[in-house]
Length: 265
Image (cartoon, rainbow, N blue to C red; front, side):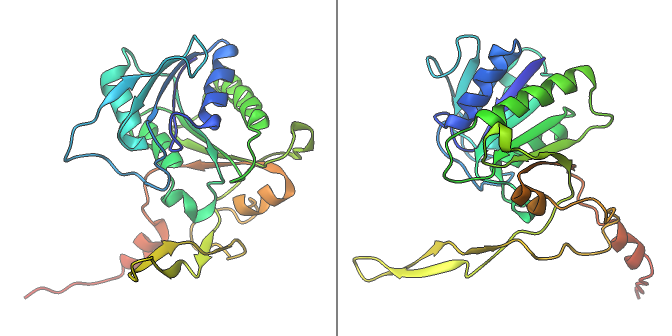
């Protein structure tokens, strides 16, 4: 398959090197266009008020991988690749492997998921891959599953345009319990800002906090309740695959608000 790979951890991140190299070694045509530095939690930001530059990268990836480092956001990278750098569209857009989980409501902030989301906005099936740990440096199991998933998609493409948000537990391949299709859960933070004082006596705030993963997902989303939640299955060492799309319309809300009546003079 012809693959476009991006990320939000930057061109030097071990996750994207492991992913791109393993897929190139498996025989796929791999192109990397990713940020030149870490751009985590940038969401779906685009650069509008300044130029975007992209430089060819050599000697970081497998010799068969074509790579560019871009000074824009993850979404910039994918958009630039599709409209300016690639001679023809890829079969699949991949983002990752991210250092840290992208579960529950965290996906709204995720540069990793946003890079993949740019793919489906442009009509291309996409996959976001995340290792559910901020400390583990072993991306081998995640890359191995990426190979399996891409091989399966080559034989049996997705039935509709969608983004697969894949989270892999930070364990050895033999310890992975299986693969589960999941629905998006809720992952919130409390005590979000830590108030501190710098050496000059000025106050500043550091975004931090404790994660809450046991918050129940809201009802009324027209989702089957028997489908497990992503934040739950990762704890049991299952790989989580959550299908996503970019249309955020709340179907139940349309039904409820259709009863409203507005009177104008």
